[in-house]
Length: 303
Image (cartoon, rainbow, N blue to C red):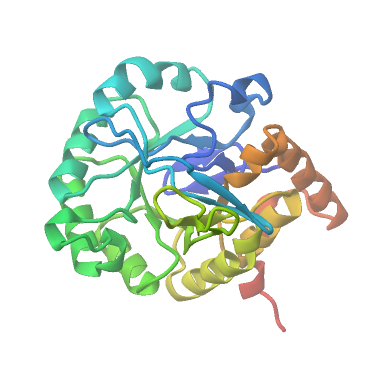
């Protein structure tokens, strides 16, 4: 069974990557899952300086999903390079480092610190607030995101993915970052949401609001992938509510080249391995031996 995927010069052994944030840095997950068996690993978001994150509670359960407000907690790029990245690189698969900043200069400084590391590429988290623009998220301002990617491309020639927010001028932002030099898109980040703790008569999360992930968002993100591929024909990592091999094939059929698994890993640390096995089972049911044969199948249909 051929599950290989090629995206902008990189060949992934299979389409299943771990999404940023939900697997930590593999400290515990490695006891349940062979991380080398996956197509790739996307690290937690890394910033220029260490961040403590938001006050607890940070996670609230909802029907068919989770709302999180972790707050991008991380050790900062220098500690990450020295102490965290080396054991991650020991797993024989692609490693993409998710990075973020509150200004373009912060993004550039993190990319500069990582450009000589033996990673496969960077994923830009543009859902964070741009303090230079009064707190508007980068991903809601096409002109700012364009400037960010153009500046980054002057110093970072490697594989570059932009992780889009799921709301706002998503198509315009996607088109802009591709024109500015991004190689691929991750579609998408979590959806703005909140939960109420009625017993204690307050919001359930310490920060108040957070991001919804899990099976509840799959139909929404699947449509977003379909819409963006239809308009742009660009390489896409589908990310939202994936828990099974069938989910993966649906994303591939809608135009994603590969996927990122997030919340499912929190709920069942062995889930990504099960997904890989299920992909082969589903392909066999369909009479296919190559994953590529299903890619963007909805756009090839005569119906």
